[in-house]
Image (cartoon, rainbow, N blue to C red; front, side, top):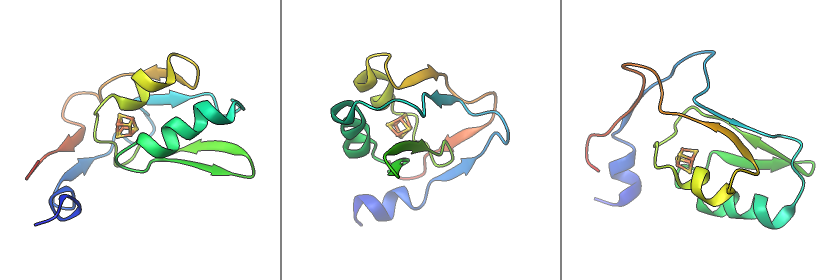
Length: 91
Ligand code: SF4
């Protein structure tokens, strides 16, 4: 079983309308943006028309983006509320 196969078994309980991670979508320093594009294991960061975009649904709550952004792009990082968020099944 591959890592992708295992991650595909995880279940996500989305906290609709309450993102647990917020970013500065106007941030423009490409080398900092590249770090998140490359490092997020769930591939939740993207870039469209030069702007960074983010979707908190499917977050693995690993904290990588929080550490790598150094407070520049990620403006708020919290675990999802209560019973929301990822439920790991196989790692
Ligand atoms: S916490 Fe991890 S999985 Fe979630 S957005 Fe940040 S890098 Fe991606």
